[in-house]
Amino acid sequence: MITPWRTHRRRRTRPRRRPSAASDAHYRAHRASARAVLVARVEALSAQHGFTYNRIAIRNTLTRWGSCSSRKNINLHYGLAFLPPSVRDYVIVHELCHLRELHHGAAFWARVAQIMPDYRTHRRALRAYAPHTIVRMTHMSPHEDFGIGA
Ligand SMILES: [Zn+2]
Image (tube, rainbow, N blue to C red; front, side):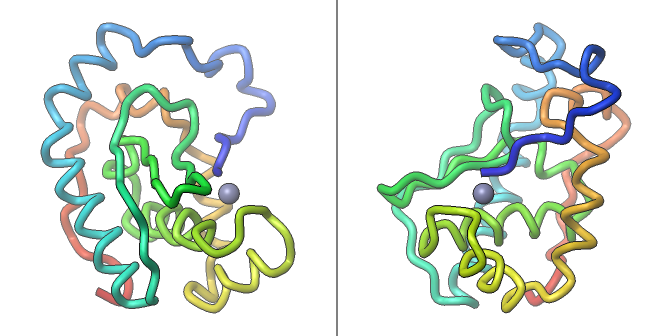
């Protein structure tokens, strides 16, 4: 699970309980392309690194970038498709590693580092974004390039 960074901007960027109308419209406009990009990346990275999962759900209702359940279901925020490819892939690798390690202990981070040795850089970069601010990135369209190791 990855919770968005909240410190000094806490009040302004507090997530809404439900997506706003603007956010919902943005999601509806982009969900098909976002889903295509994200599912392709999950499939490529899991094939490359030998992960097996059950289902992938792409949503707009999450206040997190992603989560992974003990039933091996992966949930991703559609807004990940709007992030820089390396940051997006970090989140996907993070959730894939939870298929094996359902915690944030040393074994988990060792697994992440094995796949993505520079993950700390991308993890830091992720802190500039929060899922519920994606709607403000109206100038952006989903990244369709295929980032690292594809
Ligand atoms: Zn996590």
